[in-house]
Amino acid sequence: MKRRLRAVCQALILTSALFPLGCAIPHVPSRTIYEDPVNYVRLEIDDTVLPEWPPGHHTHPIIITAEQVARILKGMLVQDDQIWIQKWIQDEAPLVPAFTKDEVVLLAPRIAEAFVAAKYNERVTFYLSQPQTSVKRVITSGGLYVNGRELHIILGNWQIVYGIPTYGMIYDRRYPMRPTVAKGFNLFFEPADAVIKQRSSLWDTILANTKDELVVDMGLVERSVAAVMPQKGL
Image 1 (tube, rainbow, N blue to C red):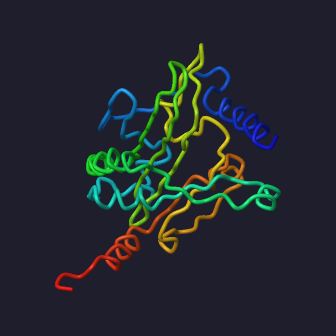
Image 2 (tube, helix red, strand yellow):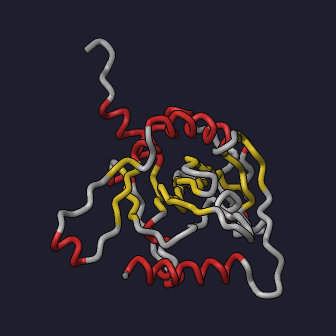
């Protein structure tokens, strides 16, 4: 019941955001870095970045290696959202990797390439799809951007079964950072001390954006990797 209610509320909010009355369907300018029949990595314009306000510009372009990106993707963990009675009756849901090994191999070099090509007002977005039938697919999608040493990661959808509508707009591919259904997961990162806690607005709470965004200190991630690497000569 809880998930159905959240799904209805989320659908209403998404509909009003995506298709305001009297307005045409918004177009998000983008540049393709990689695309195959079911996946892509793109650069999309971030309309919240104002040219006349340099402090709000993203730190792009930026050189991040594929190995660094892979480490970050491997550090992302997902946990199914549970209400209190579920936690009381059942064991707490386990933390599982947000991406499979194959997905990390696919995404890491393309995301690294995208960051090198990104402009100050662009975000790197990704879309992963696993076709199930001619009208259904399992999708994982989101986006990333860098501000200083802070890497912002948004997971809009995670292993969501998306039914292609018989009519109307197919927007899961067009809006990778927006959820297609109510979010039923929480996002974590390992090492936990690399996560920078953010203040959340009421609107973010209503849209459940507090559960699907991470802000990671890239310096701490790099130091944690160096700390566990064996030293030469030992």
